Length: 191
Image (cartoon, helix red, strand yellow):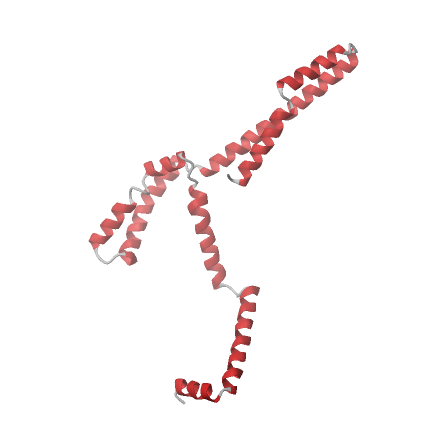
C-alpha cells in the first residue's frame, strides 16, 4: 500500500475511533446525572466542539483520499490523447530501429495497439493500475539519470575515478618489477 494512503487510513481510524456513538452517549449521560446545569452545558459544548473538530478532520482525510485517487486516474481526454499519439510514435520508432521489414512493423504494432487502447487503459485503471507511478515515475527517473550522467561527474564518480587511477599506478609498478610482464607489455604495445 502507498505510504501516503496508509497514513491516511491510520489517521482516519484514529479520528473515527475517538468519538464513537457509545462513548458520546456515555459522556452525555454522565454529564446529565451530575445535575449541575452550567457544568452539563460546558461538557456538552466540549462534546460538540470535539465532534465538529473530528468531522473537519474526517472531511480533510476524505479529500486527501480523493486527491490521491484522482492523481492515479487518467481522464478520458488524456486517455484519448495517449492512445491517438502513442501509436504513431511507436510506429515511427519501430520503423527506424526495432524491426527490419514492414511486415515486422505490422506485427509489432498488432501486438502493441491492444495494450495502449482506450479500453485497456480504462480496465487497468479500474483494477488499480497507476500509470503515473508505473510508467511516468520510472521514465522520469531514467531521464534524470541520463541528464545527470551527461553533466559534471558527481563526488562518487570522482572518488571512483581517483580509485581507478591509484589502481592503475599500482599495476604499473607491479609490471615494472616483473621483467617477463614488462616484456609481454612491450610486445603487446609493439615496442
